Amino acid sequence: MKALAAALLFAPLLIPSPVHALANRPAGSAGASAALEAGAPVSVARPAKENDYSSLINLAEKGSPETRAQAQFALINMGGRAVPDLLHALDKREYIPQLVYVLNGIKDERSAKPLANLLNLKDKKSLESVKNALFSLGSHSVPYLFAAIEDPSRCQPAAEVLASVKAPEYREKLKNYLKDKQTYVRRAAADVELSWLDPSARADMEGLLGDKNVKIRRDASAYFLAFAPNFSVKEIPALLKDPDAQVRRNSVQLATKLRDVKCFPILTKILLNDPDPQVRALSAEAVFRCNENGQATAPLIAALKDKDTSVAAAAARRLGALKAAQALVPLQELLENKGKQSDDVVDAVAGALADIGMKFNANILLPYINWNDLYVVRSVIRAWNISASPQDVKVKEALRNYIKMPVDDRYKNKVRTLLGKLG
Image 1 (cartoon, rainbow, N blue to C red):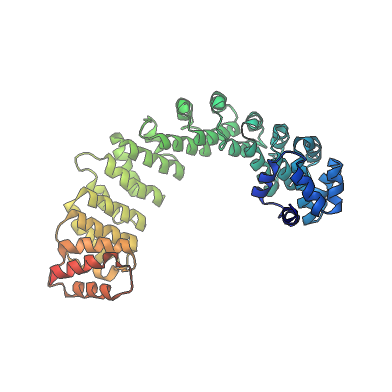
Image 2: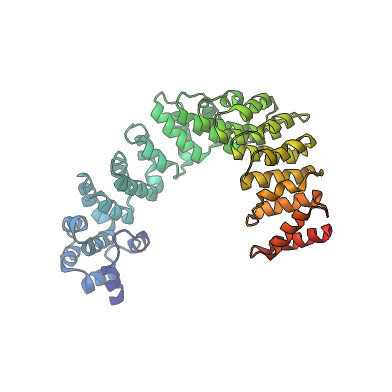
């Protein structure tokens, strides 16, 4: 016990695990009393023994680091008896991290409302401690968090906590907030719903797809993306033209998951013209998934000329998946005419050439090989298994050099096999 007391003397101020463990002991336990009597500073031991909460709170706020730790420990072990005085001190909005730390250790439901009232704090450190304490209180916090959503100064922090505290009995209330006339309420409710993912909120979230607030549209489109392909969405064509890039990204992925053929003409335009390169790259997959009768080949070949390497690589991979013979020459030209390409593009083009399965000029891959990138090695070996011939002297030389390199052994046997084939 003396060893425990000595250890507690030097306990750091903000280490949750030991405090939570000690907070679970009965208030005024023999362990706490012995620890205080054995090693706590006199300034802490006397008020702790006398249940002088005000003095302990003062020490927890203003004492030295060692004294604060001991005072916090004593208050936590006193449990619910100390809560009224702690809440009274909390009203002053001073020393909030220290007081909230103690309340979080006690976990008394009476602290839920006062803590929720502090969600408009400007200091980020203090606000985070309050949010963590409200999360620890779980269902006891939920009514006050919902009330805070109606306050513009507290709604967003309240939503962040509610998003992590699932409360099925409040689903209907949350759906009502999704229809609220105040934008800040709808935005906070959409944030929570995106985390709760209540299927019964489908109609209300669909109504938010056209909301004037961009953050709400992002949440609503992400909600349907999370449920795809189980939910269909009529508004996808309009969402694909949304002015916000994130909404368009979500919508392109949604169309991909739904294999929405009617969106194909819009998706081809997005692939070639959208100002956001991530949207264009995602559209390569969407065009591939939503095409009929081989219509995807032409726009994907056109996308090989995109200035963004992620778009060109995405288009090359989808052309390989289509086994599009028409893409054989454009894929080779991508490596021949544009100078040094990224590993991602080389990997995609080599993989596409291998998937198409037709003979090509094996030497075009030589200037771009990064033997240290296993993805590139894999794709190049696959491609050369189709097109390399005994006459490709430089290819064989590159393969022999790879075997000598101190790199990953996983592909060396494949290289040896290919060399044996080439003779």
